[in-house]
Image (cartoon, rainbow, N blue to C red; front, side, top):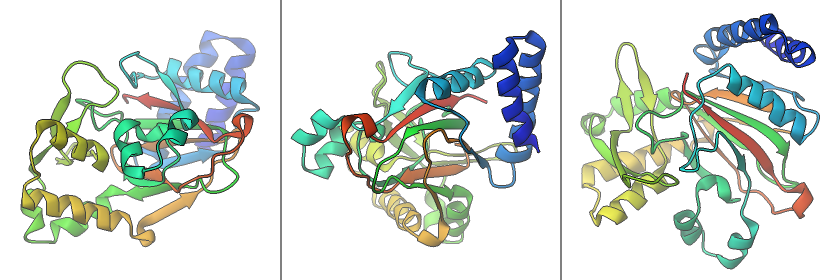
Length: 276
């Protein structure tokens, strides 16, 4: 019911541009957070929210208007296109080099289940992604509840000692300080935040010219191992016009490899980061 109210509120405001309807939209989104994003599944998919790219962009911009947006790079872009940089990918055949030279959202490489914005002092709480187009083959999205990882690791007497240790993260895409030093799991009575993108951790240690300590390496490898467990995965394929909103503090996400289609039918998502 709250999802239907939210969609209707978007449509009503776009028709009227009325301040009262904008307040109703904001109230409906806050309710959606409490009932869906901050409990239960912690994500929701709205089918066919946008008719085309422009319509989808406008509706996502409206969600941004009633939220606290976080820029996604040094250029301060608030809505970023998640699509492969085909010209660069054609020149680089090695997946390892691709991961070093491009941000994850600029490739067609799968795996690397992660959270968004791990290179920020405080990552976005919510991630919004709208599908302009998906690939002919592959491109299935994956969601994973990081709390299940934490619970399994916390039962391991050796690994649980490393849960409070800090790791270096490369601040890829952002100028200024190149490295961030943070815990992967931040847990307290009020907060739970999972911060993870293995490629950014590896790159940060390369930049620092340091080796990852054995106990820390064991933790990273265990996280990656658990993330490959398909029993922990929820898989879906966004289609044109669909939108997903997920709780980025709790859920990790990724995708399967996908084919590079013709230019006008390339897999392309629009992404926003919301502070809260």
